[in-house]
Length: 210
Image (cartoon, rainbow, N blue to C red; front, side, top):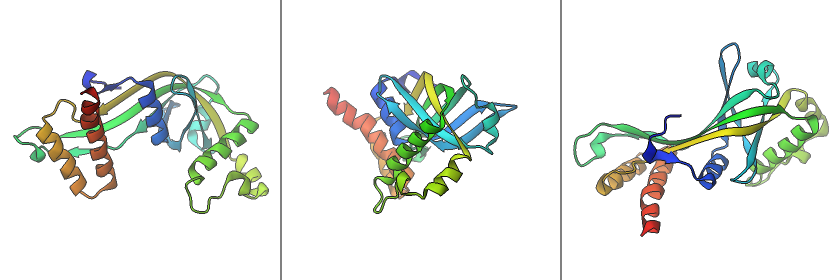
């Protein structure tokens, strides 16, 4: 990962929370060519020591390369967006603000029992905020049995974690205010989230330092 020093993120709590807030990851491993799949990935453990887990469909091309000990890369992407230089006080180069976490992992295939437990947690996590949640154990047993035979679950044990947040650190205060206002004016959820991230990074942290 490209990590300019001023955008580098090393705080375990920041990284752990970022992964939990952006669970839909890009799962990359090397097969006959570089292969990628987009999957939900959840955490188990604490910020200081955690594992990750997920599953893929058995007809996914990645499956034949998914073995115990195989190295893979998980990419977790935060809000991102184009920053027009027309928003600055003076002419400058336009840029792109973003945040991301890369986790290099070693894989371990789950047992059927571990897969079922993982699916219960996965469904529970995303169904909990629903108005009328349908939890794992509410799904017909025959349907679950048929589904389980079509997927493979796996653990991801991190051995290298890199994080970056390029959020206009070091920019002039007036430019930052203008950038966030223009992002919000786009009335786009992603742009609004990016604006919020910039404000948190620049203004809230500066207040804490004071």
